[in-house]
Image (cartoon, rainbow, N blue to C red; front, side, top):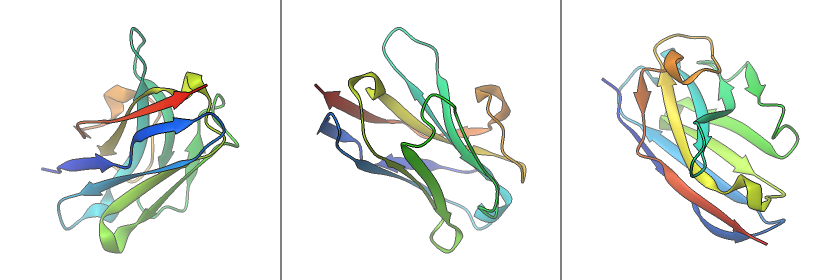
Length: 124
């Protein structure tokens, strides 16, 4: 069982930056691929970024590529999402997810554990 807790969301002006964190419980964090998803009101949950267990392989959604960086510190059981050049359309609840596999995936149903989400609101 893995428990995930996100933090770092908040209100930011367009063009600003935020760093989201996701702390995981458990001793085998490096065995899990980690992903970030977001869900805006009235929309489906959308893939944002993912990383393999070691962090050596990374994958970004085309819609946000170039404006964010995913990273992980396995010694701290934490994965990060650095968001830059934020736009109002980036407003959403951001979720981190863990996949009980080494390689990442881009579909929500490929992930086994989810955090409670952290709200990111970008004002224009």
